[in-house]
Each structure stands twice: as C-alpha cells, then as structure tokens.
Image: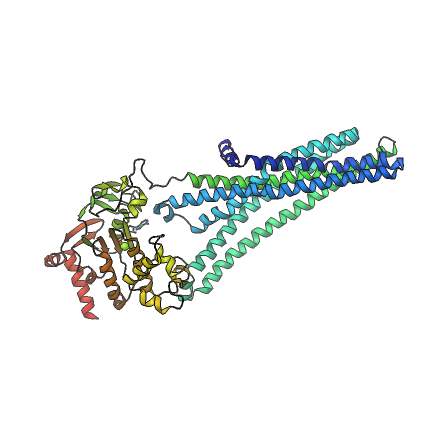
Length: 579
Ligand code: ADP
Ligand code: MG
C-alpha cells in the first residue's frame, strides 16, 4: 500500500509547479467559500443597523470582489488541475503502451484483448481523475470542516457544540451508504467488461456468425449480458437513491434541529439575528465536505485498484527481452543451427524434444509432417517469438539470444497462412516492411509480388483503403501484399509457414512464382501441406511428434520404401488421382 502510494506520488514529480498552482488555488477557493456566511453575519449585525448606504455598497462590492477572485481560482483548479491529471494519465498510458510492445507472444496467448484495452483506457482515465482530485479534495474537505467549525464556534459556542454532536450521525450514514455504493459500482464494472468483451468478439467474428446463421444464438448471449448489466445497474441506482435521500434527510434534520436551537438562543437574547443566519449558512458549508469525503471514499478505491492493476501490468516482465550484453547484428548470412532444442508452450507439455538441425546459408528447407507436429513451433523459435527451454539456436554461429531482438528480427521475413493487414491503404501496408521506403521502392516491391496490375486497375492505386484486416482484398491479394512487404524488408532469412495453404490451386500456383522469386538468395524455411510445393526444396525435414523423423533431398526421401515422406507423398498422390 505504502509502496503503491510512493509509486503514485512519483508521477507528480515532473509536474511540481502545476501541482502547487492547482493545490494552492483549490485551498484558497475552499477558504473563500467560508467568507459568505461571515459576510452575511457582519452585514446583518453591524452594517444594516448603521443605515449607512455607502458603507453597505462598499461591503457588497468587497464581497463581489471575493467572488470574482474565487471564480478565477476555479478556472485554475478546473483547467490546470485537470491538466495535471491528464498529463499524468497520458504519461501512464504511454508507459503502458510502451510496455505492451515489449511483451512476448506467450503473454498475448493468455490475454483477452478487451481487458488489455480496458486497462489502457478506462482504468487510466479513473486514475487520472484521482490524480487530479485526490490530494486536493481530501485536504480541502478537512480544511473546510475545520474552518467551518472554527467559525461556528466564533459565532456561538453552544450552538456549535449542538452541531458537533449531531453531524456525526449524518457522516456515518453517508459513509455506510458510500461503501455500499462502491461495492455495487465494482460489480457494475465487471458487467461492463463482460459485455464489452462480448461485443468485441461478436464484431470480430461477425462473418463467422453470419456464415453459420447463428445470429439468434449471439443475440441470446448478448441479451443475457445486457440483462445482467441492467439488473446490476438498477441495484446500483437503488442503493444510490436510498443513500441520497437518506443523507439529504439527515442533513435537513440536523438543519431543523439547529434552527430550533438557534431560534431558542435568539429568543433568549443569546444570539444575534445575523449570527443566526450566518450559522445556518455555515452549516451548509459544513455539509459539503461530508459529501465530498463520501465521493472520495468512492473514487479512491476505484483509482487505487486501477493503479494497482496498472502497476501489476507494468511489472510483468517480458519473458523475452534483450540480454544485457545483446549485440546488434548487421545483415546475417543466414546459416542456421538448431542445437539440442527442446521447447514446450507449457512446462509439462513438451512440443519439441532434442531437435538438431543445420541449415546452410541460402538453403531452402521444407518442413512436412502432420498437423500439430511442431512445424510452426520450429519456425517461431527462430525469431524468438518463444524461447527455447533447452539447447540453442544459432545464426551464423551466434546464439539468437545474444542478438538484440530488433536486429535479429530485421533479418527474418515471415509469410504465414493468415496474413494480418492493417486497416489503412495498400501503400501503408507494403511500407510496413520498411517504414522509410520511397514510393519507387514500394512500387518495385509491389511489382515483384505481382501486385502491380491490381494497383493500376484501382482508381486510388496505392492509396486504396483495404478495410479492417484487408477484408476488401481476395485471399491471393492479401498474400501478395504480405509478400511485397517482405520484398521491401529484404531479409536474408525467410519463413514461409503454409503461406499458400488457404488459397485455391490456381492462385497458389501463381503465388508460388512470387514466393520462389522471394526465396532467391535467402535461407528459406518452408512449411507446406501440399507436397508439390516442397518438391523444389534442397532438403525436406519430416517432423513427427516434435522430433525429426527423417530428412534428405525430396527425391532421396521418395526412394525410402517405408519412409514417412514417401507415405505422405503416396497419400497425396492417391488423393490427387482420385479427384
Ligand atoms: P504444426 O505447425 O506442425 O501444425 P504447431 O507447431 O503449430 O504444429 O503446434 C505444435 C503443438 O503445440 C500442438 O500440439 C499445438 O496444440 C501446440 N501449440 C501451438 N501453438 C501454441 C500456443 N501458442 N500455445 C500453446 N500451445 C500451442
Ligand atoms: Mg503450423
């Protein structure tokens, strides 16, 4: 807890002047609120009886001046105070996003997108509010309470004592209900998160939903979430209604009792009329911090809980990061060695065991094997998307863990089955391969990926918007875009993981040409489920259950009577013959 507050306080450090300006203005504004009751008391008791109009006008002008100053202070508190909160919020968001970029595949495998998004938006917004209002509200509330009480004592000690006895009733009532409010809000946030996740998943998968005509099912699921939200929020409102009216009633009750007592003191000649009115006004000022403290009790835990989640997030160490002594490698030749590599996504479930493989620079190696055998996994270890649990992977004799991630990955290009495209234009998506590429370079990459005829046929050309994830492109066009991106990147090592598996045979054949051109002069790891596409490989590696079952030149492997490759080949040939 103390730790958390220290960490929170650290975010104020760069904004010391802003904090001082905001805090002192808020304090001054709080003090000036106390001026009105005092002014009224003086007005009625001292000024009115004198009948001096000039003095009364002067006093009124003085009061007006106080209000003008107060209005100015409020501008400062509202604008600069929120600026303080906002600066802290945006700084935290920047840090969180930075951190997000560093986390590895393993982290994202186990996350819900909606929750991550909520952390970067809602949580931080709440923290920002607390960052602004937190310290000053608490201080002002306490100060106003003390100030109002002191002035009440100044006006009339016995009446002040009566008030001091009654007010705790209101305070306790408000606090108890405040706590219940906090609990219901908490439940409500859970509901909101649930249905945000539902909407997100639905929108993301809407094409699947409609293809299966499962709209009714989705509607029912959503209706349930929506209903949960409704009932939880209604509950929150009922607590809110009870709390508001009860605290209102208790305040007014106190007011009436104080009024009666005050009237009694006035009748006895103990209290002046001005003192009486001033006291009632002070009572109102007195109530406001109680309400404020109540809202503090509500927002503090929320902000603090958000900050705690934020800290936990920042504290998740990326499982894969640059080693202390990591070196930036320049362009590699691309000689790859897997040495005794073992790996599992979960510790108790090994996926690769004791894998040994040497790939020469410029060689094309094809991985075949049944689905789930570990082909993709072999490829994912090379750019360190996941970390080997045993053994090592070396490129040009250097352990990949001794290179910086940035330089390692800049040496590897990947085209996989499902291409992720960004929602922008064709140009932006190709340029993602090398952000600083020129127009000519982008066009050249497009040409080599055989995208040029598409681009010239589009009215907007390179600037055609391709829709979210490239929905406006065909499967083949998406793959070509992914290929163009790699042409632009021009890495010495290439991974083609079922790059054409989702395409029809004709498109596949056309794209094979581009891929062959892309593979020229690069070390290439190909995973393909159609054996025809691996026939040109220098070597085929058959992976079974996370081990290398056999390897050799495709023709060589075909000669092995009981070989796995031959078996797969015959299976494939059979299915082709039957077509
Ligand atoms: P292949 O590409 O040969 O079809 P993969 O390398 O994708 O096979 O998968 C090998 C095994 O690892 C499978 O049993 C699969 O379920 C598991 N696996 C793949 N990716 C993950 C992941 N991100 N988290 C956990 N298990 C995974
Ligand atoms: Mg795979």
